[in-house]
Amino acid sequence: MSKNWPLWEIFVRSKNGLEHRHFGSLHAADAEMALENARDVYTRRNEGVSIWVVESVNITASNPEHNGEMFEPAQDKVYRHPTFYDLPDEVKHM
Amino acid sequence: MKENLYNYILGIADNSLILGQRLGELTGHGPSLETDIACTNISLDLFGQVRSYFQYAAKIAGDDRTEDDIAMLRKEREYKNVLLVEQPNTNFAYTMARQFLFDVYHLEFLAELQKSTDLTLSAIANKCIKEVSYHERFSSDWIKRLGDGTEESKAKMQDAIDGLWTYTDELFHQTEADKAMVAEGIGVDVTKLKDAYYARVSAVLEESTLETPESKWFQKGGKEGIHTEHLGYLLAELQYMQRAYPNMEW
Image (cartoon, rainbow over all chains, first blue to last red; front, top):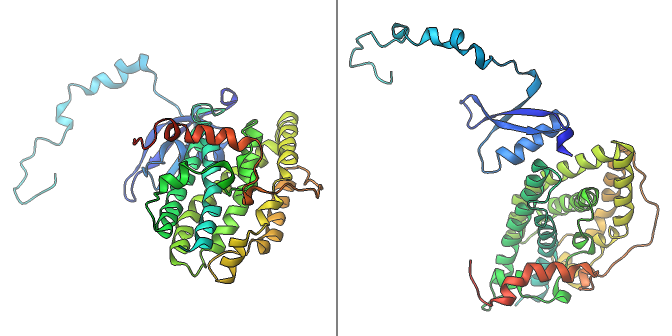
């Protein structure tokens, strides 16, 4: 049955105020079924308050073969992290 | 002990117990990972409901009976579930048709049980109704998908509806305990649920491009302990551990 169904990516918001996070993927015939399946597969232990489903073919992913040009140039640029400022002690939660 | 109330609670809980066991048989055998988990979730919801009812029944019995004794150690004729819920998982169409035909009733029943003058029963109904609303949404969705699906899925779903139809009328029968509880304001008068039930079921069948069966010949007996041949096998599996190793604990 499910081998004929398209694949869907499931995003779940765990708590109000948090962002939706990718939880995994599953098969479903359409978006409505994907929501119901996601509810049963990913939120049955009280993990969620909201679900998004996106058909996997609609996601454009970066190509791992291009990782060199895509990501390696950022590796030696530590100055892009905001770690070179002296923070006053009064500033908390940074 | 309040005999009528005790029997009344068992009448409600046995439906969930037997249907829960039937769905549990699909664990690891569902048609797909997703539907497998969905059926198991519904099964667990039903077993959770059963515990609330049987804990209350054990309290009313007032002897050393526990919820587990009530669930596991009765004989076939002492189970009061309707015949519909003990019917086997012939195929996925049957499983969903059985679920749908029960869920529509279950939802209506719980909406009324919430108004019971018995505060424990009304509180249990209040908790269960959210779960059962989802069950009904899930099963009616599948009736529509398979009914209004391919030629093959439609034929299978129509076959399942036709095959199970004969067990629907029993949902609205009353036992002596039922009548006594209705008179006391504790029980639900199920005879009053019948019209709304068939209206809802027919509406979903129509939306699913399925025929509503016209047969007026109905099976009965489950509520009085007279069951189809399927229940014995189901109980043999359900009770095996307690029968083979009495008093064994998990």
